[in-house]
Amino acid sequence: MLTTTKAAQNGHGGARDGAGRKPKALIYASEIATAEQRIVSAMPELIDSLIDSAKCGDTGAARYLLDRVLGRVQLQAAPLATDTAIPFNESDFEREQNKKAWRDGLDTW
Image (cartoon, rainbow, N blue to C red; front, side, top):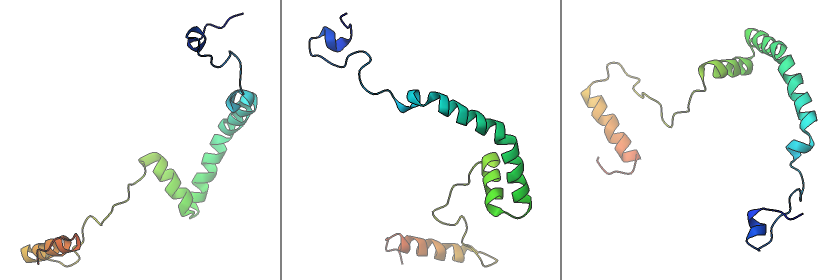
């Protein structure tokens, strides 16, 4: 039987239908489905265990749960505010701007 693939039609050859290795997802489809079902059925117990661990002081579990619910916090390249002195007046602001510009490689001093 002749194949009707585009490669066969243009005379350049090509892969035959059914040739080659099957993807591993197809080879192990039943094993993957079984493993996924086991994970899904264990989820309520896993979630309860995570919550209990977080309540007992496991900061990793607490962080994981909060990240899943509230979303992960993006890391800042620099702190949002660097003012530590109160009051932070206009001259303090100008001084901080000059320091920042100098650190960024601009000569504004």
